[in-house]
Image 1 (cartoon, rainbow, N blue to C red):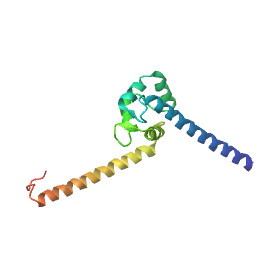
Image 2 (spheres, rainbow, N blue to C red; image 1 turned 120 degrees about the vertical axis):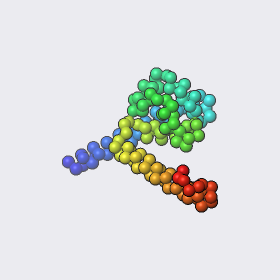
Image 3 (cartoon, rainbow, N blue to C red; image 1 turned 180 degrees about the vertical axis):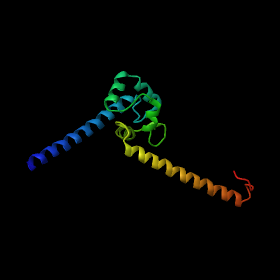
Length: 142
């Protein structure tokens, strides 16, 4: 009984790993097809043109990626914000975008937004104090 349970567990793990490899391979194939000039990157223009293909749309849906907003999807995939997507960014972005947001994803995003808001408020306060001490700002609040 224990031996069967262990074998079943190993089969489940093996199947999940196989699916992950296939998913990455499929995402890489989509990237290579979109990279029309073969420079190793996909630009927004290349991505928009590739997303016009109904087969690509259906394929991304099969990967559980919502491709209805092409520009938004491109911005999500362009992790470093340089206006082009590398193979690593594409595959990583597809893996992260797969499926629906989970509660933990939303909580992490909310935490990060709040943290950044606090940092920005603190920075603005420090700038205001520095400007006041240098006589650049008067007594009135900014």
